[in-house]
Length: 221
Image 1 (cartoon, rainbow, N blue to C red):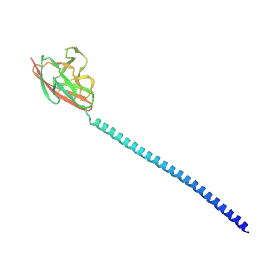
Image 2 (image 1 turned 180 degrees about the vertical axis):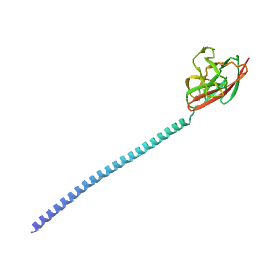
Image 3 (image 1 turned 180 degrees about the horizontal axis):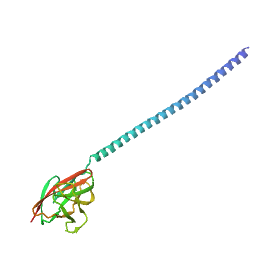
Image 4 (image 1 turned 120 degrees about the horizontal axis):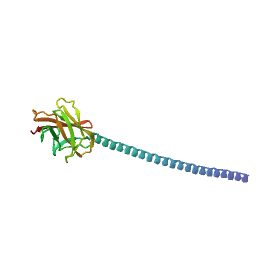
């Protein structure tokens, strides 16, 4: 009888031991699983954090780049060309000067040049020379006195106060700070002995702007 009870107790203890072992094994298994899940969550959190920081950096970089481009575009938009007219190194834009000619029938106008005093290129520059008397013929010449038929051409004037008009045919561009000597004009005017003073004006068109200067021409007899 005692032997049977002893066997039952041993069997019960063995089962308890097995259950305890299985519990410990299960506990270790779930512990490993929990540790693995924790590591995965930590890894995912790190990835999310890195991506978040990277995204913020990319957004910040994009904003900075947009701001930089906006500043550049704004600066370019504020830049403008400014063409001025000079006569013998004297600024004559919006001014009136007096010059003399050596003949009553021919008028020579030279020593004029343009300069871009703005901070942007001036494009499609065109030049018109108006005279308060009709123009019979016009020639273009250089500082060396060489005459050639191209360059200045006679046109009908739309300005009744300046019935004479010649236009420089060549269009040009001037970068900021650059200057350009206007080819000389030799005009054969309509003879009129009663006139000893002529008025003229130079108009320079570029981009959407215009520059003007006035010349009083004294005729030597």
